[in-house]
Structure formats: C-alpha cells, structure tokens
Amino acid sequence: MKNSIYFSEEHDMFREQLRRFIETEIVPNGEKWEEEGTTPRAVLRHMGSLGFLGIRYPEVYGGTEMDTLATVILAEELGRSTFGGFAVTVLVHTDMASPHLFNAGNKEQLNRFMPDIISGKKITAIAVTEPAAGSDVASIQTKATQTKGGWILNGTKMFITNGIHGDLFFVAAKTGATSRSYMITMFIVEKGTKGFSNGQKLNKMGWHSSDTAELIFDNCFVPNENVLGEVNQGFYAIMKNFQNERLVLGAQALGEAQKAIELTVDYVKERKAFSSVLWDKQAIRQRLAQRSAEVEAGRQLLYYAAWLDSQGVECIKEVSMVKAYCGELVNRVMYDCQQFHGGFGYMKESAIERMVRDARIQSIGGGATEVMLEEVAKRM
Image 1: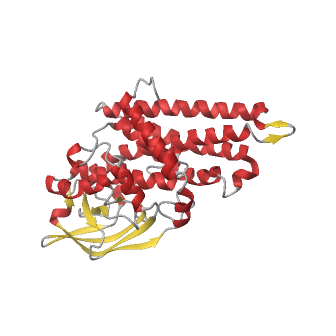
Image 2 (image 1 turned 30 degrees about the vertical axis):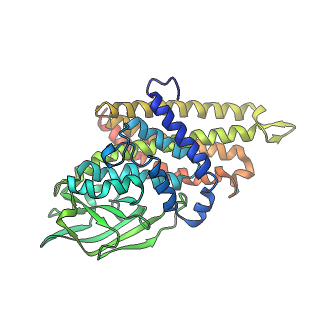
Image 3 (image 1 turned 180 degrees about the vertical axis):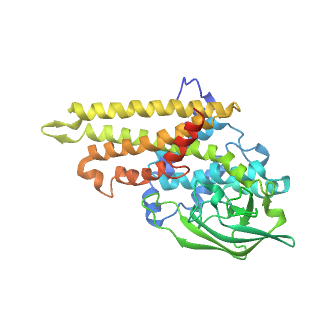
C-alpha cells in the first residue's frame, strides 16, 4: 500500500516482511495442516521470534509497539494465505484473547504471562461463547462461586478456537445473582488446572487447520490471583474487545476476497472455452471488475475505521459496518470465483474450494451480520 494516506514506511515494510513469510513458510505447508486439523506450535513460535505476535504490545514484554493499522495489515495478509484456519489460529491469539490480559491484567499477571504470549511459547484462547449464548453475552450460564482463596467455576464453553492446543484461557463466568445479570467476571485459567478439561474436538465445515473445542469446567478452582480485571466488570471488557475482534475479522475477510479475485483472474486468463480464454467473455471480466471495486471500497472503510481507532476515536458504528460489509462481501466474491473456476473450483485440490468453505463463517463468527447491522442502526 505504498503512497497510502494511512500507512507509513514502517507499515509497508511490515507488510512486505509478513507476506514473504507467508509465501515461504505457510503456503507450502498449509494443506498438511488442514489434514492434521491444527497449526503446528513450532510455526507460532517462529512467528513470535519474528515479532508477529506482539505488534501492539510494549517492548518491555517483547512487543513492537505498533498501532491498529498494523493489526489490520496482519489480519489482511493472514487472510491472503488462503488458509483461514491458520489465519484465525493466529488472530485469536494476538487480537481476540491476549488483549483481555493486556487491557485488564495487573502488573504481576502481565509480567508472568505476556512475554510467553508474545514469543509464542504460550497460546491463548477466549472462552465466552456457550451452547446457548453467543453474541448475547449476558445470557451465559457458566458460573463462578467465591470460596476461600479463589473461585469455583462450573459450566461449558462451546466453539472455542485454540481450545485443544491452547495454554491460557480467558474465561467469562457469571458472578451476579441472576441468570440475565450483566455481572460477569473474567478469569485466567491455565491448561492442566484441576476441574478444567477439553470436551470433544469439533469438526467444522471450514477452518480445518485450526482446532475448535468444547471446554468443560467442573468445580474448577481458580485462585484470586487469576481473576482478570475487576469482579463483575467482565461484560464491559468483553464488549470493549469485540471492536478489535470485529476489525481483524473484517480485515481477514478482505484479504481472502482480494486473494480469491487474483487467483481467479489468473485462472480465467488461461482457461479456454469456446475457442477463447474465459477472460474474453465480457460477463466474466465485468463481474470480476465489479467485485474488485467492492473489495476496494471495503478496504477504504476498513482502513478508515482502523485509523479512527488508532487516533482514540470511538468507532463502534464504523467497525460494525466493516464486519457486516466484509463478512457478506467475501462470500459473494467466493461464490463468483468458484463459479468461474468451473468444475475445478469444486475439487479439493483447488484453493478456491477451501476458501469458499473458510469464508462462510465470516458473516457468522465474531458477531453475525444481523447483530452488526443492529449496532449500526442504533447509532443512525
């Protein structure tokens, strides 16, 4: 994005470094990880050693102290990898889970955990969603009861990315009196804690190179020193970080859409039908041109929202627009790109086939389109 009004030379260098890493280290190996159902820990540690896992965090913990626009670059380039499972494994760690610790953790907690998070030695997950509660956070049923020296957690979490191979879980539990109460507290639960276990590993339509699981808390004792932030204030911490989560998911979706268009343009310029290449068909090239324009429009909205956030300006409406627009757009793009790949686009060996499956979650996870549009409507 050279000559962009939003990005500095440092941003451009970061994008180039990240793109090279993905092309050499991720793309050649991603299909194997899809079959294995996870992204190897060694890869995440390698990313940590290169500074990719702590771009918004202070140098004292090993971070590089960049801004929201750098986060968008990370998510966009991960989306371009064509492996959505790999991308979301990283983004959950960097931008959906660990910010809870950084934003609310005390000095002891930050010193204890942040260096290992940034280096990739410890992988994080966020545990809010339950079988009967997703975007409606106030309806969670997992309960924490105070006891001597800490809290007892009981309940189940569902659809948790990094749920099998994660080391550190930031868990939301009710600490209020009623089931509809907004009195929620966040807890740090470490892998191996007594009473905490992984339920079944969940088989998904897409994102196969990420592990997704059910988490079970059965009289799980969490000491007071692992309470994250203020008691009964967790709901507001979750709402605050939703903005970052939705921004990176929008960026990931745009990266996926842009890459899909590039792959499809290359394909239709080579594929012949009726004595000429598909690119010569006006309907095909104009549809791809239209989708390209829509992606570019989404990119400008994304960068503007990220710039607002980097300036400390409240941008809930703009971020909600990004999530709604990009989550729907990437699915329209994938539909057309698969269509123009013909029968090959339906084959497992095709990147487009995988990308179609991976993209479907973008209008659901992190805040469904309908929820996002309500956030926009409330601010109109």
